[in-house]
Length: 159
Image 1 (tube, one colour):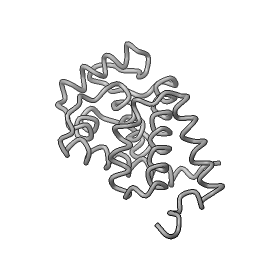
Image 2 (spheres, helix red, strand yellow):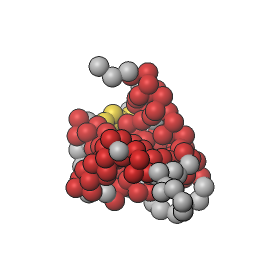
Image 3 (cartoon, helix red, strand yellow):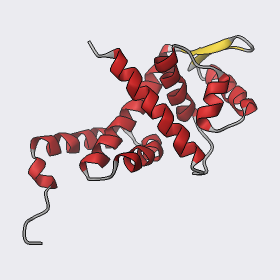
């Protein structure tokens, strides 16, 4: 069984990183996966998510959140009632969990390659949404190779 306290800590760190990245001024409109990732992490950390929390973490205005919540409901990712709140459905939770998995794989790979922690977190936030299942699988295989053969990451002597 996994340590939920540890996972909640991981999600809290991801929420803070998302907030930093969004406030740093990288210009892109948050998409479905961004919203699901934040809602999922908020549910894990606080037990629930509010529109205000989502708006704060994604650095968007409340009307944009309301519009996306309607879309997420139409897509079957959340159960949503206007003025009452929302929760992730099983399919929403699955997709959000997969986004976080892609994030974790990218962060770990970037760290292994020597990218500083904060840069790895920020870059993973942008890279995670474009990965196919095949690419993710290959990146996991590369990570496993580096774990088995860490000497592959060392610079050759004499250069």
